[in-house]
Length: 117
Image: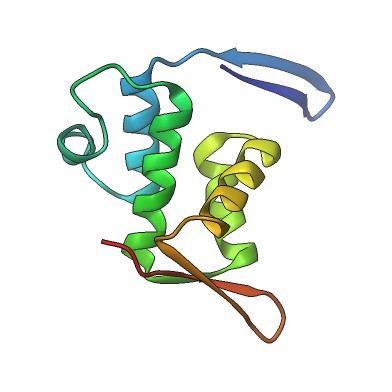
């Protein structure tokens, strides 16, 4: 579930979106420019997955396809994927500690590189 609160001009907005696992996968695929059937074939396992598992798989795929991203770029894309800054940061920390990811000190920010299979 994602809740969006704010204003459009002077009008208050309070919107709640509820998506099932397959809808999260399709949304993530659209954010990455993939066809939903490609995600269904690779990112959604045969057993039901939790939203966290699906987002983790999409986060790994995002970095794998990019090869290397700076910390701020990666966080921005993870926030777009998850819909919240907090969830994006959790995925960023999880990537930092993954054996499939190498983190190096860049000039201004860390560089995240995909090294895993």
